[in-house]
Length: 133
Image 1 (cartoon, rainbow, N blue to C red):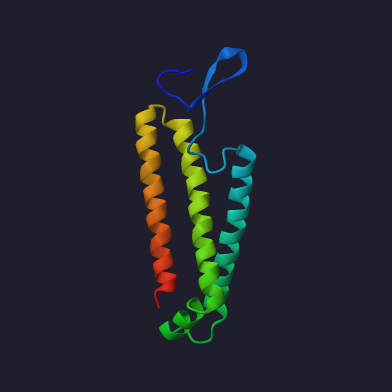
Image 2: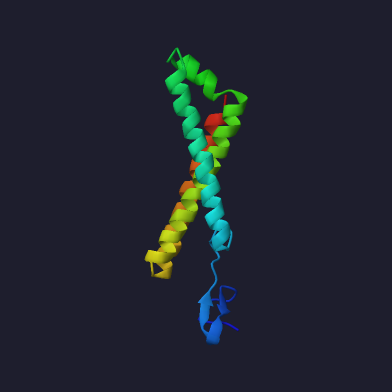
């Protein structure tokens, strides 16, 4: 049944109320989104602690020491994981803001696609930085 031209985007809720399906949610499940945000926050926190630890305890604060530290295999992998965690965390937060506060569907759609484009650009840029040399 087509509800307002939204084939596949709507479902019938309790009492026959038309409900829009969350097609842009990261996991389509609030609990999963909550867990992704918490786990991504832990990854981001661990990354920040390691970076601050290096800055505090590194005896020589030169570019060469920083470059060697950041371009080591484990930090490259951890950097990419932290970048993906930031992207997931940001997307869930921005999706929540968009669905809660931006009521016109066309504006929300454009906002969400701009956020997706920014997130993809950020991840690809970080990937290039970590794995280009």
